Image 1 (spheres, rainbow, N blue to C red):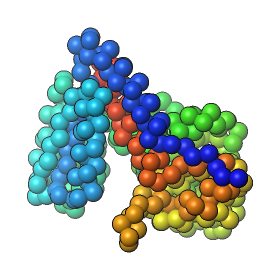
Image 2: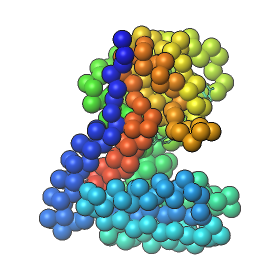
Image 3: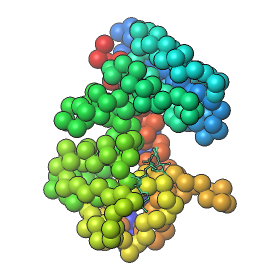
Image 4: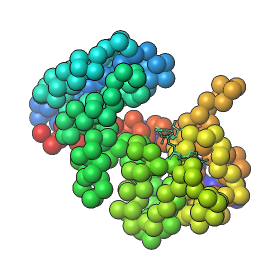
Length: 281
Ligand code: NAD
């Protein structure tokens, strides 16, 4: 039996329309949610990401600015600009596109963003708050994955969840959100022994490794929900996830495709975080 496909584009459209409605209600009260996106350097993938983020803001009626800085911008000047944006009442969310050029310490930059404007949820204050279950912002990708589980009414409480990947931006916060929702969570990484023994136990399998099609059907419990965060470009130019979609969809109960799965939800949750930052004013 083929799995239910969780359509990220359709869900993103629905959530964005709710965001647009809340945004216009806020605008009517004189507050226009504003996002500042800062890009340093000319990385082609980053250029596409920032353009999409700014366009998504405009589409839901938010204010946004996109600042492109040359790759030789000094760390001191970037920190100075962040400080100005921290104080700018038109800006409710600040996003610095990663990766940054090597001469800039990304940790120092993220820590310079005011936690109440840290819509990526990467500041240690927000990461710590997530750990104790009271975050101002949830990191966008894991937050989007939770919305996808919610969209199929998946009973997370008591479920066995396995997260493959332990990065600060996806794997770790994902595990925290699942834990808070009542799942029993295992986090695997590249050193995990007998990965399949873990993944076979998973009612919810979330994959964020950056390894194209590494999860195959023999690693998946029949009926499991499989969420594929990976975005990989194959030599033929096509995009694929970290899950071998064609084989896994035959055994999973539900699965997210790539493209059209988690990706559109990530930007949607950025919009939601920006809206919520403005609603808190
Ligand atoms: P990362 O490189 O920071 O972390 C990868 C993690 O996977 C590490 O913890 C590593 O130990 C683990 N890992 C790698 N190979 C493994 C293996 N064979 N077995 C078990 N664990 C393994 O990556 P990241 O930033 O978390 O991103 C992961 C993937 O998600 C990438 O493909 C990235 O492009 C994608 N991504 C997508 C979105 C989105 O919006 N859809 C957002 C962020 C990242």
